Length: 155
Image 1 (cartoon, one colour):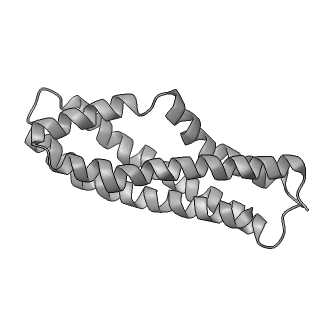
Image 2 (cartoon, one colour; image 1 turned 60 degrees about the vertical axis):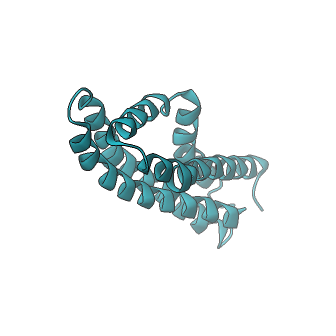
């Protein structure tokens, strides 16, 4: 039986991971396909603005929470988790960390390169950015969805 604190942390971890996974999925299935239809100059301008606005306070709470809350739920609940919930929370944490590593090592450098290319050749900037960014985003979205599903299992 989990303590009230562990249960609360697990519930918060699930909610925050669900919100984050939904954000990632919305970008994957709606935002990026919509932007794909824009001309190069419009696409690069829009992505630059997204990349300026997304890392605001609300996003940072989600971004940090998808790792911190499952970690807190796992470590607070050591000895309380059953044979399913403990491994599920730990696996969700691993998925969240991998997703963040993809973001930090892959997507953010691409965002920075796109920002630095402002005023240059938008066609070349887009070609260097869009395919790689989308591939990395698909992978990190999959990891975020799996993390969320694992936390639901742990509940």
